[in-house]
Length: 157
Length: 436
Image (tube, rainbow over all chains, first blue to last red):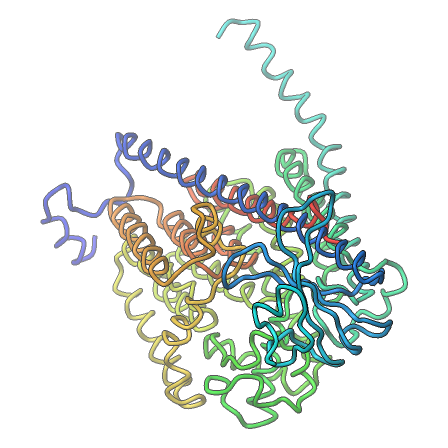
């Protein structure tokens, strides 16, 4: 036994370091197990809830893309969707080329989708255009706003 | 128990052993097929699951098809199911078969492209900053070498971020920076594979020292889906950290306390998280050699870091504080925030999470002082760090796995595997509701 261990043996029995757990610590083990099970349950519920939320979001995005394709008459694959992550609303913006070409290398039309999914579609109540070769849908690049987007002054002019 | 029931027991065991071997074989084949599918499809490129990379696996690209979310997630599910079956049937697996399976999984991943993460390109960028451009990776982000060929492969979120890795890791990575981008990728892949081999060999050794089935221990770590696909597939430096962690555990088992503590510090100078082991190790063994070993390694590391990188190379705490503020969609705190109707975690949540972590660690320290297995306590601490972290990535929930496998408290293994299962399940949204 080291000098340190000899000194530690002077501590009250309930504070002394032990080499092995004492038998009879079953109650603590049970309490820990119950806490672990409760934490596990919370994490499991949170995970399932998140997957369900994600599934709903994906259904909405599918409806957004379908609506964009129906409105524009273009069956493009490379259409980008953007969610309102700052205000946590269900308003999405879907942008895609107005004429065939590489993604974002042509003038893009963006539609603002709102409301519930009805028969696999959502309402497109406004939108704007973006110049060719614009990577990001930022307000400063937008022009020719229409519908509710015009009233909301989503374009700089 | 009556006599009839007693006589049925060996029969039941024999039956269990009889089905274990074929089940294990089928599961092993499933693991190999799932890994090959991901690697071969990944080699085609043009997938959001495969980071933009120089063509290092071009010779495989004619075999598979472009890796989509659906196929990837099905392969991960198949791998996970095979893993569960393999562990259940571990008794029927010979040492030779287990080794062959783990080696084959490593080989398949090694020859393929970098999977799922751009981190390895950040490692290479930091190395090239130091050896090719004379820049300090602790004061500059990769954007400082935007003309370097590796820059285009660095993840967009990390282009302006200085390294958060320890100085030992940065020094280890420097020679790779001299090999060109392709050479560096292969070097990093080799380093990850060798680190994994060391981790697995030491897990085997520690399991034997604790009279735990080493074959099962090897499979639990070396055939784990997150370990193979995410950690090894991305050539993550967490594998090097885990190798040093297991070296420290093995040295403690061999009663080489000073070397063990020094090894933990070396691991922390690769990636700081592993420092969580040190207080548990010291409380359990209460040896002065540990204190001297840790302080000696820390002093040496600090002198080398200061000499090479200046004061920024020593101040790892600042980098950790910066990274602790990051938030990922896969983190459990984010999921809990969503559960309570919040859009995400807020600064106050970070404080609550830190408080929860402190309470857990204090409880574990007290339990270790009173004789609880320090290996298990260290594993719980690493698991608590990953669960409370707002920036959770697949390879973070691997940290406690080798410890869980050899811990005396089997709850740790169950909890670690359950957390991993929840993480995998959370990835499944694109499979349940694909966006087309």
